[in-house]
Structure formats: structure tokens, C-alpha cells
Amino acid sequence: MSYKLNVKSNWLLFIIPLLPLLIFGVPEIYSSIENHYRRIDVLEERSAELEALKELKNPDRITESKIKSLTTQLKWGQRSLHGSTKVFLQTAGLLIVLAGMFLIMAWESSKMKNLKLKNTGWSGSQNFSDPTQDTIAQQIDWSPANSGGSNFVSHKIKQVSSSILKVKKTSTLNLFGGVFFLAGLNYVVLAYYFAYIGGILEEQSILKNIQLFFREGGIFLLLGLVFLVMFAGTATFNKHLNRFNKGKFEISFSEIYAIQLITEFVQSSGGSSGSYLSHELNLVLTNGNRINIMDHGVKAHIEEDAILLGKFLNIPVWNKISTL
Image 1 (cartoon, rainbow, N blue to C red):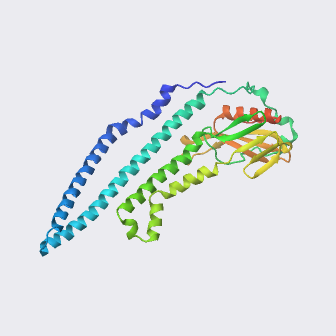
Image 2: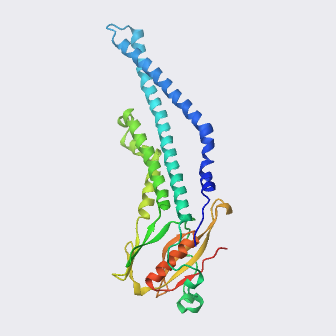
Image 3: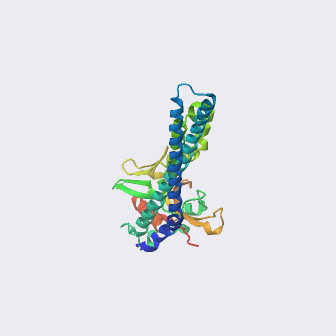
């Protein structure tokens, strides 16, 4: 079975939202840049005036007062300029990260939807066993092993060799952690850079400087890092060792009895419009316990992975996936 993607309509979904940005955003950006350079000109004029006044050998009180006033104006003017420049660069960096995310998502979506299912003998129900005819299948839990799940292909089983299968993240899953991490890093780095050149870091206490990290997007950086680390583990099926391992968890192939495919309806907090179906691929052990291997919303790909794994382990695949 193959999936045909209408590339033109798919890319329109990403191009159309850019039109308001091009129509309204570009002129606004141009205006901001012009205003930025006008402020630079004003600061340069005041700086030149201040230098000229400082060169006077015997300045009177009025001149000294003006020197103090210009010094203060320049200090806060430069900080104000640094602040607006920081916000502009932070916003630009965020837009670049988001644009990159949309492009990669479009490419990944196109790749996944056009991907022909591999030659695993996938041709329908004959690849699946009837769970009603199995004693253990009648005793195990058929409710979701994990709550939630993604509505895109988050993991795929890759055949590394004839004796090794690995469950790997797709680039789409990496995007979510990457976007949070890069967006947070962009904000934090620029915040500390402009605080440094403006002398703010020296004036503030250590506590204030730490607070700056969280105030300027550090929480997103940490969330992205945690997300990337949480999903960094790879599950491996190794025939040489006759073992399955996922992180620190490890079991023998002899303990794996079957593969279970089930569906969960994931209710969005925003209402039914954002709800979707997510499908689980679980290992069923001889003692009736289950181990979740992957959980995503693309039925054909998770069925293909289940068949590939079932043939590799020579165990039945119980398919209870629902399309509702």
C-alpha cells in the first residue's frame, strides 16, 4: 500500500499563513529598522557633543551640568537601544526557528505520506492473529497502556541488520524538543549578551542575573533539553543476544509472547476539533504484562512495524486498532 500526497495543496498550508507576514510584517520590519538607525544617529550626535564638552579646559557650571545630563542620556539611550535591538533579534531568531520547523514538518510529512510500505508481506488481515482464540489474549488488559500519544509518526522500527531491529525517533519528534531548546537558547544568549555590553550584569546581583535566565526564556531551553533527553533512548531487539532492551529495562525474547495493537481516543483540551486517534504497539509478555514500544496516530505505519517485529520475533500480532 502506498500513500499519494498532493504536494501543491500540502505546501499551500504553509505558504498561506506567510502571506499576512509578507504583506504586513515586512513593512513593519522595514519601519523598525529605519527607526533603529535614526536612534543610532541621535546617540552619535549626543556622544560627539559630549566629547566636545569634555575637551573644554575650564567648563562652567552650566557646561558641567550639561555633561552630566548628556552622560545620563547616553547611558539610558544606549540601554534602550540595546533593549529594542535585543527584542528585534530575539523575534527574528524565533521566526527563523519556527520557519525551519514548518519546512522540516512539511518535508517529513511529504516523506512519510509518500513512503511506500516496506516488503514485509503487508497485505491485510492474514498478517494478524485472532486474539479471541488465545488464552493469554483473553486475560490481558486491552485498555491503553500509555495515556496520550502523538497524531504523527513519532517512531519507526529500523532493521539495522538481519539480527537487529531498533525503534528510533523520527525527525518530527525531535523537532518539538529542538524548537523549544533553540527558541529558549536564542532568547537567553541575546539577553545575557546585551545585559553584558550594557553593564547590567555588573550592576545586578547574582540572584538578579539568575532570574534573568528564567525571565528571558530559560524555561523553554530547559523544557526542550528535558524533552530531547527523555526521548533519547532507543529500544533494541537483538537476535544475537536474544534480548530486548529499552533504557535500563531488559528481557529475554522467550518472555515475549505476542504483539498488541490498540487504539486510544485522545481528547484535546481545546475541544473535539483537536482530538485524534493514537495507536499503541505493545509487547505482551508470557506473564500477561505489557510493554509499550510506540504510540502514534498513523495506522498503516504502526501496523507495518508490528508485522515486521512479529516476523522478526516469530510471534503473533493481535490487531485491535479501531478507526472509529
